[in-house]
Length: 166
Image (cartoon, rainbow, N blue to C red):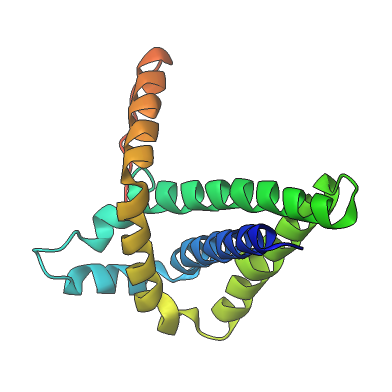
């Protein structure tokens, strides 16, 4: 492997870690009790974006974490396919897909469940900080997704249903 391939491999690993962190942050929020989330929302300073706004499923947190997961998985799969194909001399698409899928299942699904069983709420504050930083990075994409969703919502017949935070 030459120097360029090592850089691509490093970028793929970083993309995998971003994918896993976004899945972890999203899972921590989803697995935390509503009572605890409401308690945190009540304690936030008014100058900051409230937790209630962040957790509204139509708002940025959920969309941001999903955008990060998808983009990271795409980048990691593409780069791993290239690096593995160059290293082996064969088409390594399926190997790259398998690696990305396993990383997602282990770090993005199994780890959050284990954390939830062992008291994930202690990680909630850190998860929110990571999520907030990530939201800033992907805000233009989530804004675009919101506009497209609004367009489709106007096109679909029926009465709008207000989203609630329970």
